[in-house]
Image (tube, rainbow, N blue to C red):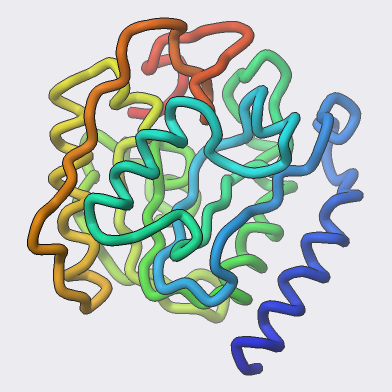
Length: 229
C-alpha cells in the first residue's frame, strides 16, 4: 500500500473510530480524539489520553502541554504537521483520571492500526502508559526514558523511544531538561541532521496545574497521580 492509499485508509479508519463503543468511555466523552498530523510521518508521538480541551476540540495535545510539545519539536526542526500525534486512549476519562486496564485493552487495536497505516520509523512514547503498552515491559518512564530499542508493533517494526510526558515536565525543571536532552537525539534516530541553532523549550509560567494531556484539568492531580513516572 503506497502513502496515498495509507492516508486514505487512515482517514476512513478515523471516521469508523468516531463511533467507537468498545468501552464505557463512549458514554461520557464529547468527541473521539483519534489523532492528527502527517499520515506518512517518520516520527509518531503517543501520549496517554485526551484532556478537557482535546475532548472539546477533537485534536490531541492542546493547552500548555501541547504548546511545550510544539516548542520541543521546533527545537529539532519539526512542526506539529511534520509528525503524527496520538494517544493510547481516544476518549477522555472522566475527571482526567488514569486509564483503566480494560479501557487500554479496548483502545489498543486503534493505536496499533494507526501505527500500521502511518508506518513511522520512530515512535516516541510520552509517559508511563504509552511506554508500558508499546514496549510490553513493566518499567516506569523514569527508568527507561531516552533508551531507544527496536520493537515490533503488529506487523510494523519501529524504534521505540520513551520520553517524559510534557505535562510532567511543565513544573519540574530537571525533568524538562531531561526531556529537552532526549528530544535532541530524535534527529539522529530519524537519520536527519540536527538543526544548527536549537530552540530550547521554555518553562511555562506557573498558573493552573497541568492536566492529563492538555494541562487544563478539571480535577488537578500531581504528576505521580498522572502515572507519568
